[in-house]
Length: 312
Image (cartoon, one colour):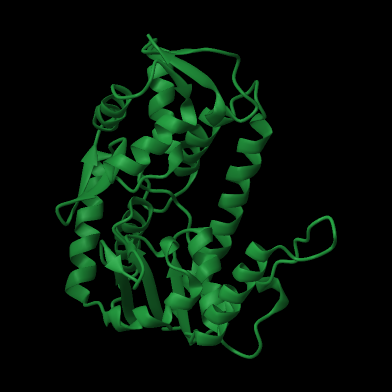
C-alpha cells in the first residue's frame, strides 16, 4: 500500500481523477449538456465534450484509490510557523488571512466555517499519516516550488525526521517550467489529470540525509518565523511584509487612477512570478488601504476583490 501526500484540495481532486482516468468508458460527468433555446447542444459544448472524451480515451491511469490520498492543507507559506505541529497559532494565521476578505461586518461566518473545515480535514489526514508511519507504509510526496507546496514539503521532512521515519519515502517533484507538451507548468494544480501518468518518471526515493537536511532548514525557518517564505534560487527563504509590498507597489505604479482590487491582485500574481495565491496579495493590498496609500471608492463590495479603489 502507498500513501499519496498532496498539499491542497485542487491537487487532491486532480490526483484522484488521475488514479482512474482512462479506465473504461468516458463517464457522464466529463460531458456538458448545456443547450440553446431550441434544445440543441451548442457547438462549443460539443467541441468541449469531444476534447474531454479524447483526453479520457488517451489517458493512462496512475492507479490507487481515493483512500490512499492524504491532503495536508497548512498554507505554511505565510504567518506563524513556530509550532512543531501546526495547531492553534497556525489556524489563527489562516483565519487572519481569510478574515481580511471576510471581516466581522462582511460574512465573518464564512471565515469561521472555512478554517473549521480545514482544521477538521487536517486532523483526519494527519491521523492517517501517523497510521501509515506506524505501519511502515510507502509514502509518496507530490510537491513543487509553489510556496504552499514547498513549505509543506519542508515541514513534512521535519515531521518525518521527528518520527525517525527515513525508509519507504519517495518524492514527485515538479520542476519549475515543466513542459507538458502545450504550456509550461510550475505547480501540480496546473496539470490536467490526464497528464499525471507522464510525470511518473520524475519519481525518486529520498534519502535519510536529504530528509534531515530539509528538517534542519525548517527548524531554522521556524526560528525566523517570518511573514512569508518563498523559494528563491533553489533555497527556501524568509521575507517580511515589505518584500511583498514592494512587488505590489511596483505593479500599482502602472495601474490607472481607479481600478478594482481584483485587477491589482491578478496583475501581481501574473507579473511577479511569486506563485502566491490571491489571499496573501489581497492582504498586502489591504495594508495599503489601511495606510491610506489606496482609497476605497465605495463601500466594501459583496465580493471584496471587486471593490473599486483609487490611488492617493
